[in-house]
Length: 94
Image: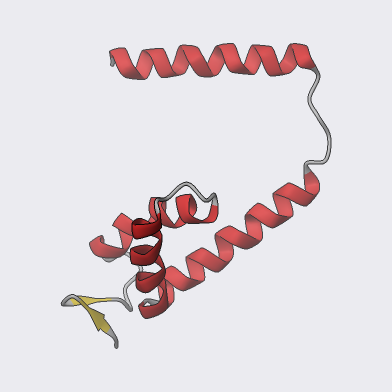
């Protein structure tokens, strides 16, 4: 078993690893700052379960990207945007 900062990384439910799940997705989407990228990459390199999640997320994103070559009609996109805005408003007023 490997350890990093005193946490076991062979348990995918580890709280430390759970903290990285969203950051892994944001890393794949290029939405992290350089310093955060380095931290997430270092964690992935030292944690097999998180490396597996990273690889899985990249694979899923690639398959979805290949499968989504169509563009939704403008009317549908507008309706979806309105619904997203309504949900965001409900969440913020929560």
